[in-house]
Length: 508
Image (cartoon, rainbow, N blue to C red; front, side, top):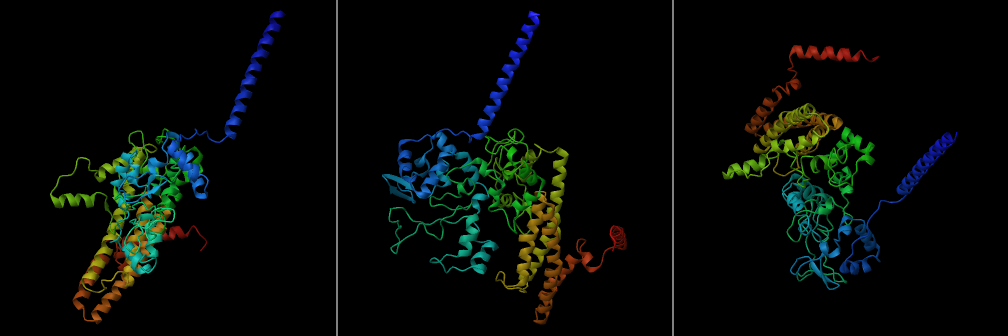
């Protein structure tokens, strides 16, 4: 009897302990989840303390200080002067509170600590985004759309549009004598034609290219924010390069928005398959680490095609041509398009099988090649023939066909190719291939015929004949002969049978 009583007491005691432990754990979880994420106190040196003693009392300064306090910089003791301090002779330096201050923090400044990232970025296409003066996009902004009649010679179309993504060439504001101007409180003033600007390819006063804050918003510099798809979508969106819209349509984007809370966006080093597995973002595929690859700030390291031009080409084609023309051997670190593709395939293989990845690339390549063969190359041949034979003027965009051709490659062709590259079928089809076909067959071809007829009437018979020959060769090719009613009887019968079977699904 005594033994039984002791056993009962032991069981009750054990259960009581278990109950208390479970209760304490539940209470701890509740407390933990009710508190904000723990942040260590910022490491504030004497000079930073002096800076924030004033700036934290002002409206904008207070926000900036609070952002800095929440940053990784504050955790490791990177204060104000580590970034904003200037050296004697710096173009953008001005004296403030006994210190030389840099007006703009540039990639050159960031490289003092982030040398690898700065070097990778400097060699990327992003860093050269500001070199757009000779592009048709720039002709549209600076000639067709706008005018240089504002703010002492600036063009609002370029300043407020193009340059905010591509980057401006930053300049110091000068007085009538050509000397730098300073504000009433002694701050060096920058020319409003060129500043503010955080364009990716900004050309800075110290000669460096780019803007780290294009992606890493100051002064928090949150990696979680930089990894968000919308971060890239600030520039990569719209009718000519709708990457963010394509991503949102794709399974990748759908998974991200459905499982965003599982993405562990603030983790370091944020390796796919280890730190997260819910979905990829733009950064995952183009920049971030895998178990086999380090982070890169050269976004071209994993891209095999360049889809920007009138006719798509492999991304290394232009550089290869330069080395070949000079008779020089390729550098040992030269990345061929095949190597870049392997880099991207390595990312894909973290979630997909080898067969899946290889089959995807076959589908993607076939879409790019079809665009090139059916629209890109024929369209370019037609436009060259029209210009050569003086059937359109040398002035860009003064002929209707120039606008329609621009839509063909710059908008519709890119959408079809980019949609395929990121698995956005609606963008590939209805915003891409359909628009391409409609434009080519109902606008460009009729316009070419009208120009041929006009050339004959005006006496340019030789030119008209040459363009007509080019047009005939295109329309009689396999891809376009349907337009002339030259499909084989077997193919016509096949299409009719398929159409009849499809119509049987509906009442009419």
